[in-house]
Length: 278
Image (tube, rainbow, N blue to C red; front, side, top):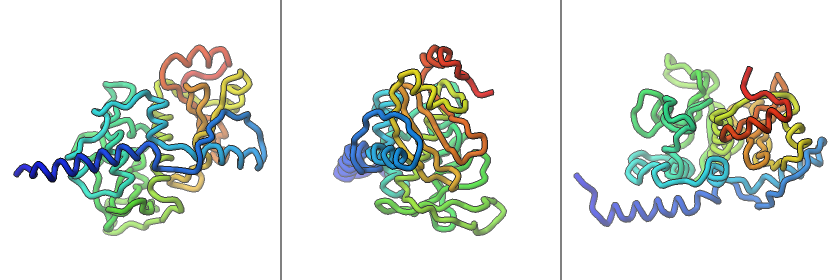
């Protein structure tokens, strides 16, 4: 049975409000985003943390991938077909259908490149949003080692990670993260943007190489919390084209970097940096 016109109109108005606040909601400290020189030491890190506080994932999506079009977000009916907390509503409304850079790639959206954002509808590539132990599972590790879950509703609820995900267990062991859902989504989105870049490579000291070449280096997310404590990388935007991920606690000690298109090849070639993952 179709919904009454007034009810449908009310939903459209609410989703419009969701989209209006999406570009400023996830993290809000202040928006001083001037490029800074890379310096070592705790004082430099604190300064970079202060500068990166104004970051929002929706705004950065458009900055890195280009302007959002209406068809890149989930529809009003899709958003309202499932109960979910406000940050997930906002994100699916804004970017739930944003495709990867390769139209032929078998992914349900742009955010299934490293780990997987759950889908709102049944498909052959990504698991659907689902309930597990009275929580809403919204993301899966790429090999199913863990899942991320949150409450089924709320303004910005906590996130829990399964310690050892197994379909054979009737009940999972959950570990609550310190930061709320909105924070987790920012870390997740940046990871997926990086690993889904048209050009992806890694090298030690790549960030210093970019800065040494005179390219502006702008911190966008410093030591963001993710699934594990080791996963607290920092992300930098270089020259409005490269996204760089630095995680000093990781074993290889190398910087991952991606470029939103193939234009960055000439820059990498001039700096002697790899243009693909070995």
